Length: 225
Image (cartoon, rainbow, N blue to C red; front, side):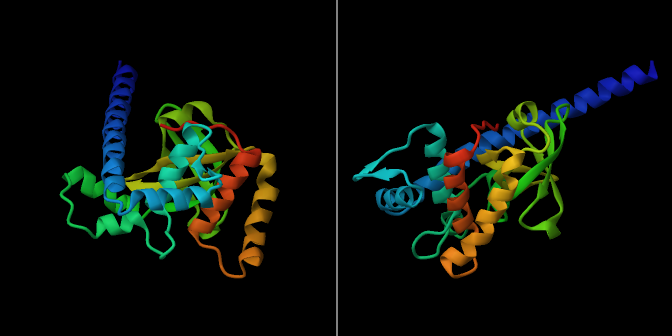
């Protein structure tokens, strides 16, 4: 009897965590719309970002699929523009009125960490993955909560994603680039060559552009959630 009670308690705890997760995820989507609406000269920023991502052809924005569009919006929100500014930081410093939950999420968005990770463990019961940072080894491992990934990915898979700290876990920004484990040497070599090509130390925007390109060349279709 005691075992059954414990199991039910654990199941209930997981259920509450998933409900909380979905609430935060929904709020993240709403907040993302507010951030994009805050964008000055949106047409100019969208066109310039599309060019950088290779989504601009003969004067036309060509997003082949929904993932391309999401990658473009993610780039606009989190990565630097031509003046070196990040929209998410500009929004954070504004006086836009937000709910308490949105304020909490926004702080996590500003403190996000983007890198190439290896999936070292998966717990489908709690919808969590353990990720090992391959570009910043000093950071060690992260616990990502993601309903989609926890049910579809596998150990060893590589993910370039943006981790947002929320309470005691991490969530993605909604965009990830996935690769088979055997592409790891090539990806790390491309990262190393980036410094030589740019003749400076690459930043997160440079790496985002690199992994977006790599995703189009030999990446996998992914769906997080």
